Image (cartoon, rainbow, N blue to C red; front, side, top):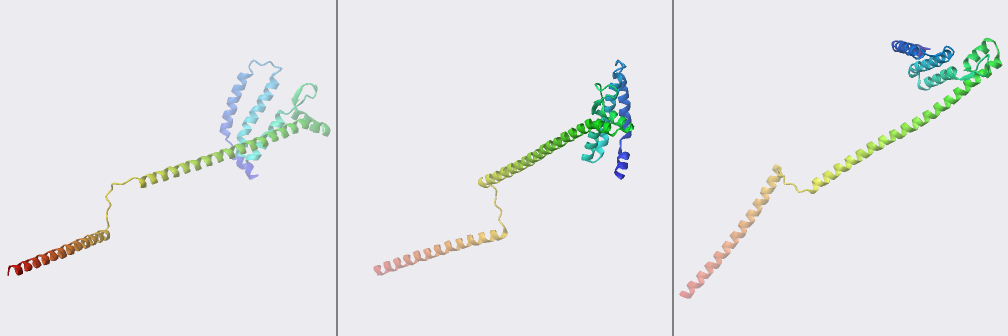
Amino acid sequence: MDWLKSILQSLPLDAISDILGEIVIWWSQMVKGVPPDDLPMYAYLGGAIIVLALWVLVARIMPKPLGGMTWMMLFAVLLAPGSALGDPSVIAPASISVVYAIMMKDTALAINSAMPILVVLVVGMFIGFVWQLVRGAFESSLDKARIRSREDTKANLQLAGGNYLVKKMAEPTDAIVTKTPIQKEAANGQDEAKLSESQTVNLVKTRKDTAITEAANAEKDLKDN
């Protein structure tokens, strides 16, 4: 019974009282020109609608299946059609006949009077079950569509990023490449090696030319002597 106490404590009583006050004012304005003979029917239907509307606030606090089931049971008890006690041709709430049969201790009449209530309750439960199935399938398909949309968006972003990187790698860059000290030393060593090689070639060439010149001068001196 703890859940019942928590429900009673969490009920928005102030909001319910405000709603009831507004409903009374609205109801008095609506039935102002109604004939006296039709006033009981209007009062009963209006009261049933008010009770069902207020019970929605209670059903929201209760566990999900239990709240809907209690609302459907209340709907069946209040609005299941039956026949009037004095005149069977007149439509009356079936719950009144059930209460009258229980007070008269007539079990057969109570069972017969309760049949419309049971039919309305079964039909309402079936409709609620089908509605929950349709709602669950719709929400599931909606969740799948959202997941698929997220995956497509992620794939498009990854594809766009990959194309951007490939394009950047394919484009020539004019940026100045900075060399590390080790790379600079290696480059300087290669330049010195190339310089020393060219100097050696030039020295050998110079010595060869000098030797040829001396040999030519020596041959010329011999001819003169």
